[in-house]
Amino acid sequence: MEYLLIYAKEKNKFDGRVVYVEDNYSDDYGYYIENPNESHEKWKIVTLDQVIYKQSKIKNWREAKEKWGQNWKEIRTQLKAEFALKNAEKIVSLNTLQKPSAGIQEVIEKSKKRRNRVFEFKRKDSEPIFTYNGRTLAFYKSKIRNINGKETPSRILTNIWNDISYLGIGPEGGVTFLNGKKPEALIKRVIELSTDENDLVFDSFAGSGTTGAVAHKMKRRWIMAEMGHQADNLIIPRLQKIVAGKDQSGVSEAVKWKNGGGFQYYKLGESVIHEQDMNWALKAEEMAEAVFLHFQYRPIKAEWLEKENMRPLQNTLF
Image (cartoon, helix red, strand yellow):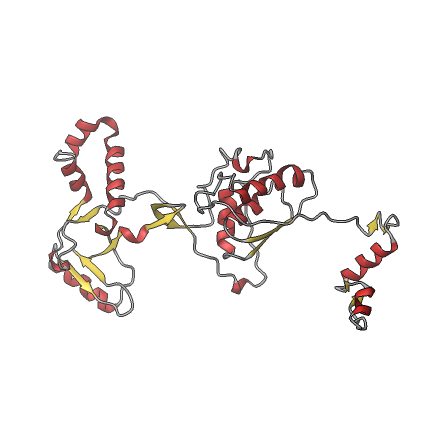
C-alpha cells in the first residue's frame, strides 16, 4: 500500500476540489418511468427488471435463468446497466430521506396514503422533490458524468484510490524507469485536486518526467528538477515528443491532448560551496555573481550604465 500526503500553506484556504471517478451501475436504480413526458401525477413507474424481461421477450426470472444459464443474474445486471445509461433521465431509485423538513414530510405522508401516484414538493432555488409510496425519487442522470471522455456513472472521490492500476504503464511516454515510474492517471488526479489551468506545478525529483508530461498535457505551467542522467536520456526526449504530438500515451486521450507548447532547459552551474568550503575552482566574478544573486541583486554591465548616463542602483551588481 502506498500513501499520498497533501499539504497546504493554509488549511482553511485549500478547497479540496471535488473530483468524480467512474462507478458501476447499482441495482438501487431499479425503477423506470414509462411516460416521463406526461405530468408527474400520471407517471407510471415499473421495475427495471420488467423492462429488461420485456425487451428480452421473457416473462420473469425463471425464464431468464433458463434462457441465459447460470450467469443469468450477471447478464441481467449488464443489460440493466446499459439500458440505464442510455435512459438515465427515466431511471430512478426510491429513497428514504433522513430528517426531511416538515413540508417534505407532509408530502411523503400523503404519498403513503395514495399509493402508486407521484407527488411533487416544489423548492424555490432547487429542483423539486418527487415522492412515491412514501419514498423520494432520485434520478440516475444525476450520477452520469463525462469522465476521461466518456459518459459513465460516477461517484465522488474518497481518500482510498483503488481504481488506478500500475499495470501497463511501461509504454507511457516511451520511457523506461524501473521501480520509480508513476501512472500518468495518478498524476492527473493529483493535479486535478490542487490546480487550475495555467497554474504552476513543481516537481523537485523529476525522475522520468511524468509530472511535467501530465502537467503539460493538462495546460499547466511546470518546473522540474533532476540531477541524474534521466534529464538528458528520458525527460527531454519525452517532453519533445509531447510538444510535437508524437506521444499520445497515458492521459492524452482523456485530456484531449494533441500537441503544442514548449519548454526551456537549463543546467545548474557549479556550487559555490565545495566540501564545506568555498569552491575555489570558480572565477571571482562567478563567486560574486552567485553571492549577490542569492540576495536578489541583479548583475548588469557597467558599460550599459555609462551609455544610458545612469548611476548604478543599490541592488545592482556590475
